[in-house]
Image 1 (cartoon, rainbow, N blue to C red):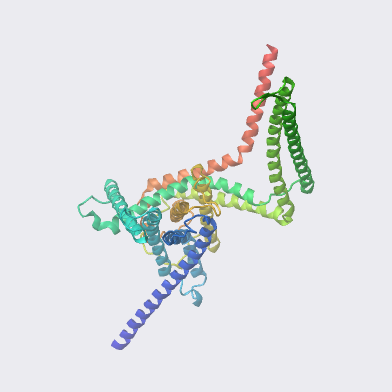
Image 2: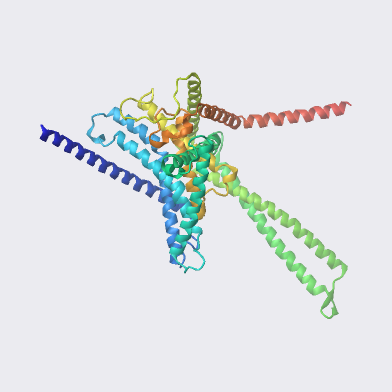
Length: 527
């Protein structure tokens, strides 16, 4: 019996060891995949014509490479944070559909729990260590008195980073004492990992959720405009070929007018120079007297040139408008009938469907919170995959939740970069500097880390937030969660109403103004 028990214990230890090794291999493969996709994205936006990339100084090249690698890693963590809820929901449904399948034995609760814990850990490292260190490292020059090299820059970066870390941690301890999370004691730094760092991350997550409260309703509206620009709209009662020919002929006419004006300017300048040289009367000492008719003629030439310059400006503006319109018509001509007739209406209907379902879910979640049926997003209990479906519609409902989560992420990003204060920070292809890359990667990490919280707060899914994500203190505040749902639903409905009624309101305003002018004219005529 003792030997059998020892064998069972040994088998359990071996199984636990193999499960741990398998999980770490899966995590490593996921990190490599996410890092590769992030590398492709960052390489698409980074600027390649700067001295820091093609510098003769090896130290500058090394600093740039380290900064680029850490920015790429931060974006990979952001992608992982955005994928947490969809992967978890899909894993639960797969285990429900195939509970005894050999090919999904590796998919278990321990793997998903570890994934949440790793993303939480790397999010903290990226936000509070990697990105600040990279920025200070790229801006450092080394202490005065040291030789030029990489080590003096590392010393300076480490010193400044430690000073900033002490300041931030002291402020975090003071805030935690103010909010009553922990009393400020002499040995407060002993609770650094258990109290202060989670509190700091909860503050950052709260800021991210507040930022998404502003960006997401605006992104719902902006996404319709983005789809309208990218996809080809249907051609209803339009002859595109005829319009293209008309624009092409008008463009050729404008070009001929510009060429004629340029030729006329050259002839005027030649005539003016010839008259000035041939008809002047020499007075000695390099001076020349021009008779009054020649002066009037030169003034007339000057006025004529100014008039032609204004005409040239108007013609150039019209030429640019014609060129953009002709390109748009050319895009319409080259698009297929299926793309014009089905893709654009289907995309618009899909956006309307996702937006409508999101608003209905927010309303339902708000009512359930008021009645007391729905629990708060705060969750610290252990979750086991494959027991029951979290959606009343089964796999279809789970798939719809996954699509809505991705839709929320897309709308938040579109709305965030459509804000007026983000126009100078928005990344551009092949034109984004290294500090802008750092800033954008930080913003993406904050938004992605807040996406699971947003989805859980507004009731998109009932999947519990695992790991330290579910232990964030403010998620258990009923007033904050309820007020967030009310504000989110109200602002989204108002933004959509403003978007779809803007044309009607403009037309009504124009008609009212027109009727008011007619009425005032009529009354003045009677009087």
